[in-house]
Amino acid sequence: MLGTSRVLWAIAIANAALYALLLPLWEGFDEPFHYGYVQFLADHGAFPDARFTPLSREIADSLLLAPASESVKRNLPRVTTYSEFFSKDRQEQMQMRDALDRVNPSLRSSPSDILNYEAHQAPLAYLMLAPVDRVVRNIAIRIRVLLLRFLAAGAGAALLLSGMKRLGKELGMSDGFADAGCFCVLCCQMTWATMGHVANDWLSVPLSIWVLYWTLRYWRRRSAVDAVWLASVTAAGLLAKSYFLAIFLFAGIVVLVVRRWRNAVLFFVMAGLAAFPWYWRNLSLYGVLTSTQEARSGISARELATTALRMDWLLAPGRAARSALWTGNNTFMTYSKFTLNLLLAAIALGFIGWLVSAGNRSAKWIVAGFSTTYVVALAYATAVSYLFTRGAALEPSPWYSEVLMGPILCCCFLGFSGMGRWGRYVAMGTAGLFSFVLIATYLFKLIPYYGGVEAKATFGNLGDLYFRHLGILSSNLSLTSCGPVWAIVLLTVFLVFLCPFYVVRLARLL
Image (cartoon, rainbow, N blue to C red; front, side, top):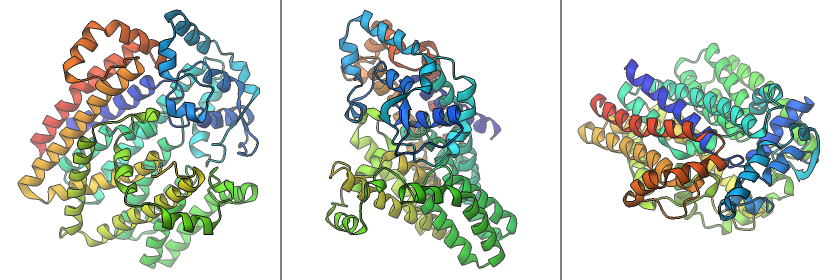
């Protein structure tokens, strides 16, 4: 099993590195604003204020020079889309790239006219990145962001994989099925779209898995040590992302149900005292706990309830579930609906199989409670976004849904393990399909798109694209991606061969 575990770690680190390199500057969800938070902390040693803190001129100038997706342009009309960038002549493209790398780092101390709408976020993930940003503050912004991506994605991958392994053991999974669940999480495109750029999700998503693990462990052992660990991880989550308010509520209910009152006091005092100053600050500055721009817009409870009653909730779950698997980053391009629905059907089959199996009932109630509490929070966020965007947002932001991906896949493969031979076959097929989607994401979607290929990449033209037009593709990627093309090629080839190899290893284990 040691060799299999090493391969999993190799897949995790390779994906983290490849995403950091391949993703163009500012292609991550709201990345310029998240990086603006890190930059403000590094330069001023104080927390930004969402009402007044602008992005730096360095970031604003780079937004004019780095190509971006259509969704970014809708948010920031001044940016150049990929299609606009590739319609320019070659010399102008090279001049833009050269100008991007020559944006003066001293401009980071000058304010721009763009307000940082992410300045309300909980600070822990940014505080961990800020010292590195301060050390490298004088190098080009593209390289600086790339280094922070490496740090964030690598640390997030380590926390995610170790948390998944611990959760699998706590749920009673065998090594083969636990590794299969970990592998599928690592092959999910939205895992890396969420954690592979400068933001706070690289910390909050793995921490949510660790909270579930320590909740299950506390329920089983009911010791003060486990209560301290649960409080510590929950406090870290509260200081990483405000959606942990829902997770804190869930963990607190479990602690109270156990009725070890000293442990309960220990949990609430530790988690509450650690997070209280930040959320009190939010209430003092903005009048709301979460402090998102939607919440700060003055939406009343009555408006929210009225909106929730008239929304078409039957459409949201399917769309949200598919976007939790695949979005194509900030491009929100399409992927085969049939393939994604097939993956969702397999996941649902395994999860339901686990729920109805004669296993640990307490664990089922805890996982179900965790999932239900968070789904209610997602529904609330969906209603707020729907009202704020006047009906444009019909489902929760896909990076929010990643909190559920790891736990659900763990339980899914635990369900497969109890289905006998057919369960093993479905588990192998699910792992193989996840592997295929990851490879197709790189070869058919992201690399051609960021490489300026307008034609749809198919099996038929794959050889033509990567052999006859490899020079053009590489040249275009060198002008859009954050890292060197040779490293992108090596890591892509590595994963294209390693993932199917690992599926074969899993087939033997299962």
